[in-house]
Amino acid sequence: MNVIYGLLAISILVALIFLVVFILSVRNGQYDDSYTPSVRMLFEDELVKSDAKNSTKNDNK
Image (cartoon, rainbow, N blue to C red; front, side, top):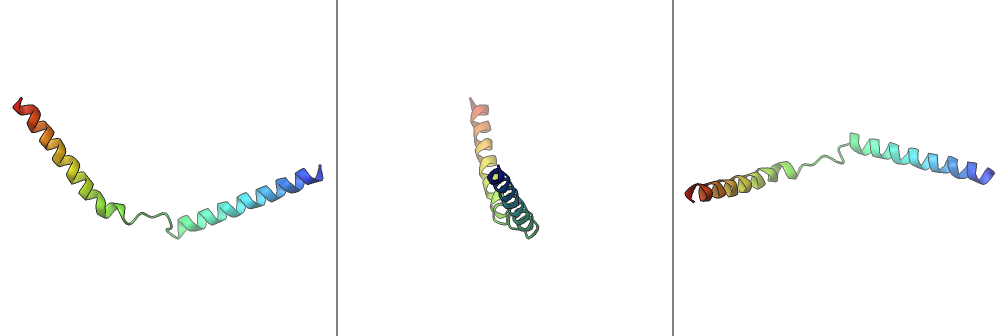
């Protein structure tokens, strides 16, 4: 039974360590996405152009 208590304590300790590391990485901006916003406008332009082409094709029919 003592082994179960020891393993439980160790697992809680490891979980807390991972939580602290995750919170610190979020605060330091580790997960900030600086690439996608600069490229997003290119993807949106392609979608708008293809939608405009589809609507003109449908209007001509």
